[in-house]
Length: 443
Image (tube, rainbow, N blue to C red; front, side, top):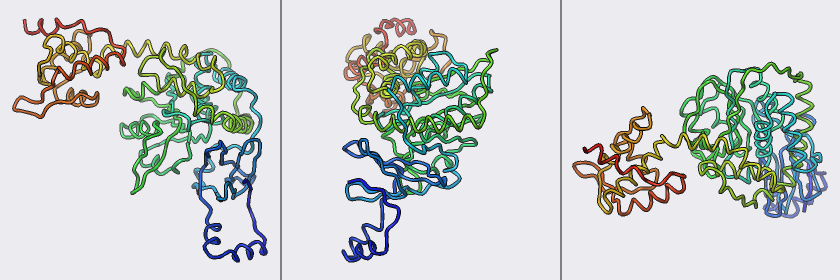
């Protein structure tokens, strides 16, 4: 059953009350929502009404119903309250318009980015996929992030402005703090467009948590859901491994290319056209995206979740999915180079070296730390790893140490080596051939 309900006549109200107080209470209290996905593929979506307030659009196959209250399967729904100041800034569709094929929509988005921001085809293709990903965000476990770097602030601002027009539920933010982000409405699936000079470590950690669908964030005695695509324009670096693995860097280098005008009127036109197309794409593609099983074996291990998310953005086109591997190839090469001196990699290598030298023995974490430090030194890294730091890294990697004695914690190499070998395969590390490091140090 599918209806849109905005008013009731007095006769209808009397009939309703005659069915009893319990039924009246159930009907008079609609379920508040920012959107629903039902088992049969039907959707309830937030849209913008003519008066600027939110309405709900119920999509069931080819049928649509719009109202302040909509009914589906015997239940009534109304939009959850969103602060008026936030609502004015969130981009919502006003209608649903045909989007053509996925390939056609992706091409339109890519050409818009290339035209108005002057980016190369690879960067524009990645950005277009992130836009589509914002429309099927419930189908992915990892929300991709675009990190805009480089000195050309004019083009960077253009890209942010264009993405505000294109992405689903986009909202522009600056002066952002963790408390400010937590105060936003839960479950809206915002696309966060953040532009500010620096991002504090607590804010980066919160945004990292918000990038994973399974992570719910505690706030004032309950959990909030801030899962959504992120676009970050900041002067400060985002150097943690988690950011590297889930983000796409877009470099803005000054260019002599003359770009067309992108004024407020044109942005408004782009918003109206593409928000409605994106809603159409979401209606037809979300179910397929949730079912997609993408083979990411050709992608660097650390980028597999990101690759799966980008592939889900084109769920009905295998050729476009295959392109994701090529689009992330260069980033994979960079990660493999950085992996050479990453803390996790050298910790795994140190365990494997000791496991080959002293099979079946138990060694102190301090000895593993010494080997890891020597590996880093030989590779030209100034990073320092002490036993306490290494112990935490080993714990995060799934190694189990024995209880501490007077000299510290021990690791049983008989148990640890098979796990280290498995991790090395998953991380794409080379075979352990550096056993001489330990002997040379002793000599």
